[in-house]
Length: 463
Image 1 (cartoon, rainbow, N blue to C red):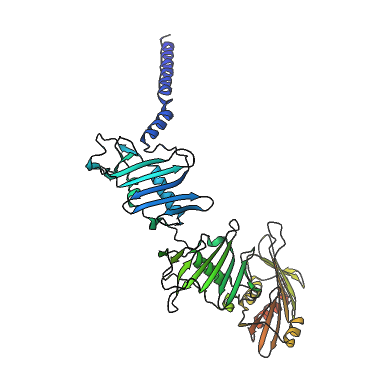
Image 2 (cartoon, rainbow, N blue to C red):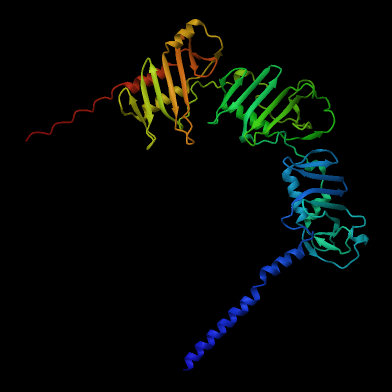
């Protein structure tokens, strides 16, 4: 009986403890929200959208506005593009100021640096009234700065984020990028120069094609380096008036970049310094002029042939799953989709040694142009019609249902010490050095040879 009473008493105590804990904790979220609101200096909701910032400090007046879809712009002291990341950082630092202490004192006292303030700030909301505050000197004790809301009589100490208002300068807020495009998204490039225009276009597989003045396969690495260089250009200074010593009316080169990011296109002019020095300035799409100092710009003056791909076949070993060779020798290789190994499909279906398949791939990789030919003679055209080798490469099936990409190449020669390659869909011929096709011929011949018969097994010894 006594033990049962003890259990009942313990149960009652547990229930009372649980109720007490619930009673204490049920107001925790509300209290936390109330405390956070009390610590927040500005009466701006965390989710409120800031559309403009005005700051008056020792550097003068700075005003920023957010203009969709172009992002932030500096409107005073100059009209210019603003750096979205830097502006967002400043805005969030100012709107998120926390009250550290509430000292008792007259905000007008000289010790607090608020008469006049070292900086005054106004934040404009998309919905709601503008909110302003003033920042004075650094707090005498501990961290933070003296501050007060505009028109308020209460003095507070806010966090060190207030220093952003004191040190804010227009120069730091300006967008230093030459173009507002990411290199990975650029899919069209037009380079206009006195020596001629080169227009390039990126294909679905990531490769590039020259579209003007000829249709030709582009050197992917050369194009990538030029795009990377332009997209990485940053201003070392700004010229809000005419460019001193530069010739904006006659740029050394004009670049037009088109992006897959919403179909955006930007045009920039690149000018040379006096005396024909390296490119020094860029006029951006909005007309502003920036100094780019000694920034590297590879291939800006490169001749057309530098933009051509010199490798004839452009073999992608990972994405190619069928190789057909006809002409002087015939063979068809297919990649086993399960194991990724190459197998001979014709003239007879059989496995092939890894080194034999690799020899063909290496031979195709090794064929490179020494030069290019726009107007081949009748003899060269006739030789290509009766090609020494024809190669057809088929890419792995496209995952989006599109047709698999194919590359077809005809090889001819030697003719007068040269060999030639014609890629389907490409205007000019690849001119090869003598003997360029020997490695290819040897590799195909090796593949088509019947495998050596296995050595005869020794007969078992007699009794």
